[in-house]
Length: 286
Image 1 (cartoon, rainbow, N blue to C red):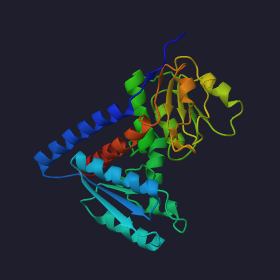
Image 2: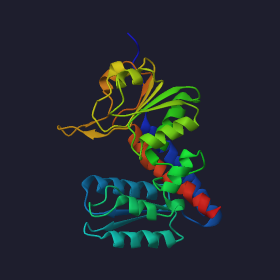
Image 3: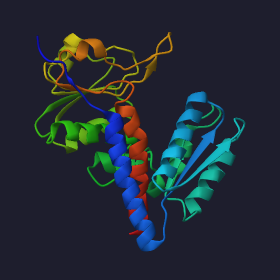
Image 4: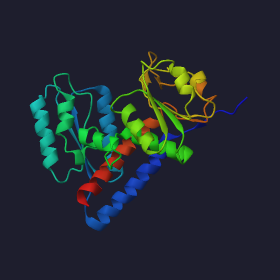
């Protein structure tokens, strides 16, 4: 019987990245008397968003950044939120702006994202950053794909020539993930719910990125023996437990390396938000 896959420890990788960032922030403070600033805007009382924002705040403070959360009531109008974004754009002490999604139904999320200064768009969602990424130019990149790429490089070294299949075509994960893999010289297939014979497509892949939001959809027999599996999905099951988009119990017996859920990509997402804030700080301040 084949050995089980190596488990890719996202918690350890995120802790190492945060330690690097903390060291750099400390150096900036000592040399220039400046502190990178991350501002998060939360509208309403979405429980998952509140937990997530609190975690971002805590980790930003731990690495020595200025961290401010702007908590606005659910009835905040689109005009009021746009005014808040304009205020943060104009504030030179703010290096990163993140408006937590989802927003209440009466606010157009695209309008809000388009209003953020692209140089402070640490989520990497502004059309300017999306376009730069597609063109292969330096850009602020969405945090989850960025974190996934760091885990892939740590696991595999060079990715050149490998066949990668990304399952899911969202603007937040699937599309930017495909762009990053292309830049790393992979041969990339972007698959989705309408892909014909998805299992056969996935079986070709040396790298599988699962980002569809359907618990345990990707079965063990879809995985090419020895492939590296990055499971981006976080799905809450009826019993309250979390499951990824990959059937971990099956896939771990076939894959060469795999991220667990929880403890895989998740911790890297916030660490990469801090990394993006530092990138934005350097770009803005030379």
